[in-house]
Amino acid sequence: MTHDFAAQKAETFATYSELQDKHGLPDVADVDYFFVPSSEESDWRPLADALSRADYTCEYIEPEDDEAPYLVATLMDQVVSADGIWIGEDVATRAALDHGFTPDGWGLEG
Image (cartoon, rainbow, N blue to C red):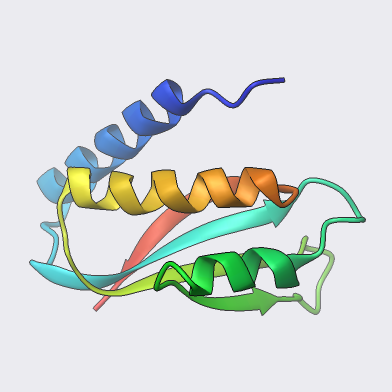
């Protein structure tokens, strides 16, 4: 199945607008992108290596509960805009898909 980047971009822009309208967003923040393994064979290390070379800081989270593990890829000190979030998400998603992971949203810190 082919990934629907247009739908993902539309969701990112809609989420950004909703958050901006309801709460306001900072001018600058760390942007976290979340990725979950597509299968039990998915290895997070090659993905983290690829993203690190593109200036993302990566952390693999293995929850203690029954939740699924996930990779957080962070771009530090980003100007917050829908376009900026999407550009980082697009780059990270393409790498994630190539390494057996699927996107699972984004968040802001800062």
